[in-house]
Structures are given as C-alpha cells and as structure tokens.
Image (tube, rainbow, N blue to C red; front, top):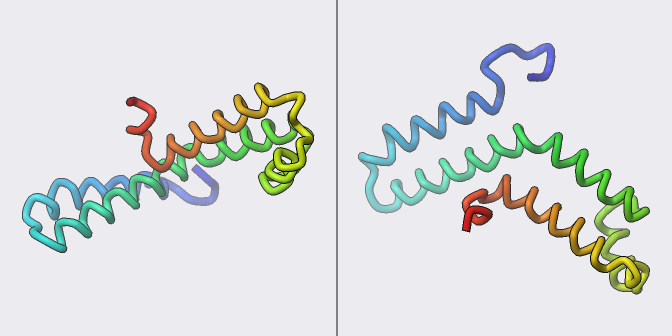
Length: 114
C-alpha cells in the first residue's frame, strides 16, 4: 500500500469489481454484453496483477539490464543486433526469458502453467 492511501488498495478495488462482473453480471449476460464482460474482467485482472507484481518486476528487470551493462530494452536490442553480446548469448537468453516470464505473470499467468 502506498501512503497516504488506506485500504482498500487499488488492487483490492479492482479485484472486487472483477469478482462482481464474474459472479453477478456474467451469468446473466448474453451475446455482446457477455463477451465484453469477460474482456473487462480480464483487463481488470491484468491491471490488478501489474499493480501487485509490477514494482518487483521493474526492479528485477533493471537488475537484469544492469548485469548486461545496458540502460534499457532499446539498448539491449541494439546490442543484440550488432553482436555486442555474441559471447554472452546463453546469459542474454536466460535474462530475456526471465523478463518474458514476468510479462506472462501479468498478462496471462495461465500460459506459464502449460
């Protein structure tokens, strides 16, 4: 929780709206409204996860970039294109894979379970 804000947190508010959509709106919705209700619930879940996991993911991502000696993803991509990391490809693959896992934990953690 970020001071000066109290409970419920932003993530908790999103969770309650998402649960309401799933429990109360979705069962009675049909057609287009049902589809858009599912989309809205998924969007809320993504935002909820990003609020909860985002700070740790950002810190881990910055640390990964620092280990490679770059300041951001643009510099990393440029380094990969120019061959700067050719002698460190296993490390680069591992660090990029860790970033992809972080992204999936927010976007759709179900993909990680498969």
